[in-house]
Every structure is written in C-alpha cells, then in structure tokens.
Image (spheres, rainbow, N blue to C red):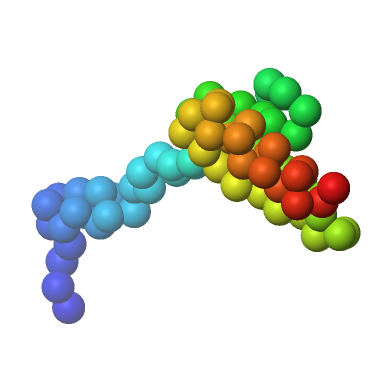
Length: 78
C-alpha cells in the first residue's frame, strides 16, 4: 500500500473546490410608441400593422422610413 503524502492530499483538496456559478441575464426589449403602429426600442423603429387578419411587422433604422412603409400598407388596404 502507498502512503498519502501531504502533496497528494493538497492536490485532492484543490480538485474538489468548486468555482463560482455564472448566471447570464437577458433583458427584455421594451418598445415605446412613437406614432400610431410605430414603436421605438432604442435602436430601431418597429412598424406593426394588420392587413386581412395577418400582422405585418418590419424594423427600420429611421423613423421616416417606418412611417412611409406604414402609410404605403394603409393605402393598399383602402
């Protein structure tokens, strides 16, 4: 039989030590209304409009492009 030395005991103790757990959190995107059917999330403008029971949604980098697309879709409905 082998005798355990102090170094072997120290190695066993360090292997059993657990490191801290890392928890990642994701933030939920919140949209603030800018105009009717146009919302801003801090980076882009989202336009949502329902046509014939189907919801159409697109993201734009500029507010004018979002409103222009919304108006075009509204004209196709009328």
